[in-house]
Amino acid sequence: MRVCPKSKNLAFLVDVFPQTFYHEGFFYAEKMNTQEIWKPVAECNGEYYVSSWGRVKSFKFGKERIMKPGLSRGYLSVIISKTNEKVKCKTIHKLVALAFIPNPENKPSVNHKDGNKLNNHIDNLEWNTYKENIQHAWKNGLCESTRVAITKRQSKPVFDLLTSTKYDSLKIACLQTGENYWTQKNRTLNQRKNQRFFYL
Image 1 (cartoon, rainbow, N blue to C red):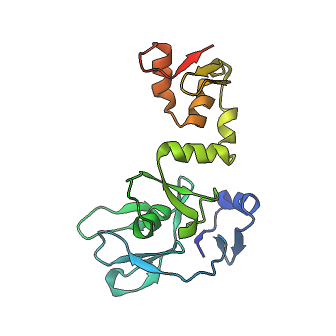
Image 2 (cartoon, one colour):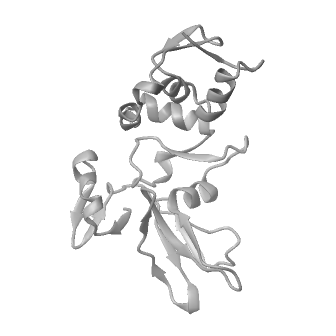
Image 3 (tube, rainbow, N blue to C red):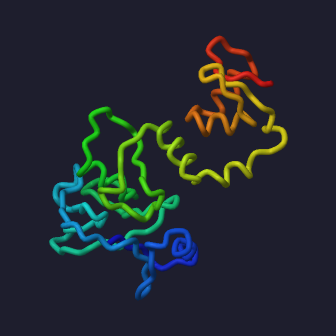
């Protein structure tokens, strides 16, 4: 199971994700019935190990201990300190993916299939492009708050030349297609040769 420190900011997870529960000062994601496998974290000289369940173990100073993660931008993370290097904060889902999931296409992003950022089990993770990650978030209703952030000034409808689709705004178009909003806004406003969207 995965665990993160008690925090008022995490209380909402119990409501949002039914498989998350609170016990003895910690929030836990769902229990796993599969066998837990450990592998060394890359370039750490065997001082840190990550498991297929999303747990991280430290062997620093010759002492074995399960690390208690913190929260970084909504993701569970741990502090990794290498010899003669600066201390770094590493997200656990990325450590699990690097250790267990092949990435032949060299995709840069790791996606949580069920949308639960606490669920870092290997079966819940996959390598994605940034575009695929955004499309997954939109498809599963994880971008609802972005719709609210769209102002009247940004709500001018646009037409997608690539798919012949009309969208209520450029921001919504970019979220659904995975395009970079600022890049497409610049191209659309300046009518660049490679622009994809046109204002209606």
